[in-house]
Length: 453
Image (tube, rainbow, N blue to C red; front, side):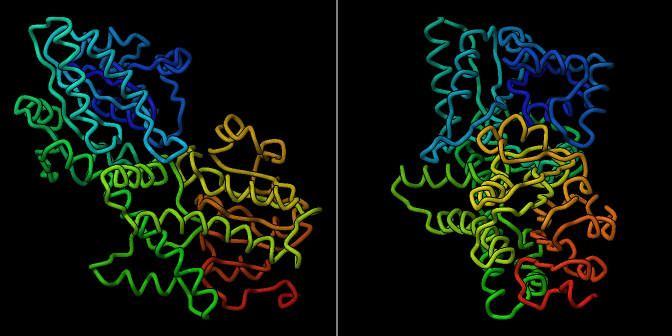
């Protein structure tokens, strides 16, 4: 069986590389010629642990190839995964222009029976709409074959996308075609042998499962973040609250970590798209809407926390702040909708100078943050960013921050503030005592520099 992947972003590239490692002949297609050139040489345009090895292995084995030709990818494949972007429009709805273009090309170039699989996150009803569009295209061509459509949403965590693809917690397949179901079962035969749970349903349900999963996790994050803000005012500790809640197996401890808000390519756009779908069908999702609003509030409160501690008036002219972590989570270079952007933007608006450092996110930030890059000094290391700074703000919990030489860094600073927006060091007195330390979700007395002198 030959497989085509349309789109070489996080989802398409990882999925294609993993399927090639199973021995399938995989052709990945993208309109970006420069990206395809790099991929053909085994050079990944994105950072994802384990991906480079899969790319090299697939290319060397001859099971993985890349092209800018939609015609080539479509005509040489039996199963075609649509893995293009579905970004948010200004009104929150999903922009399906890339999906529509991929569908148009499939309808134009298909040369026999195909199974088209919707891997991108698409609003409910999109798969059925794609099926209708493809049927019309084939009728216009007087084609003697058909194309079946299935929804097979991805559940990949960036930073762990390769392992999540190799060892999924579940596989959801939404189709009304027995042949499409059988072909996908062949592709995922290894998962079936390992007893991975499979759920077979109609396309609409499969699409909803993806949106419902992301929306629920976003709600959980916003819930604990609101509790963190309240905890600071009533004298409670959010770390202990989350631990106590997580001991209840009906709740679980996952996604109960207080922080500066969620970001990334999924939660922000998927919650907004789900709300948009609900409005179009006359069924408001008040809880999801509240989670979106709470997330925006959380990022603004982080700016207020920092500026209020550094300056009684809240303005930061003459202050230099080192921001550590630009990617929306560790082990990825993805900065899309990252809380770091809003926090930096807020600090710059208050007059601060910003030194930024991130193990993987700076390249993307330099390329994409054109509106705020004039106020950012990108640094080579944690130590470089902190030198002569008044404060450090940890936005993303990269593990390497734990062993960065804290005493040396504290000694190099002009001021002594550490805003730990991920509570990485809430239990580490050795780091806390070096700074005026501020965590999220606790008003317990912070160590102050005066106490340690």
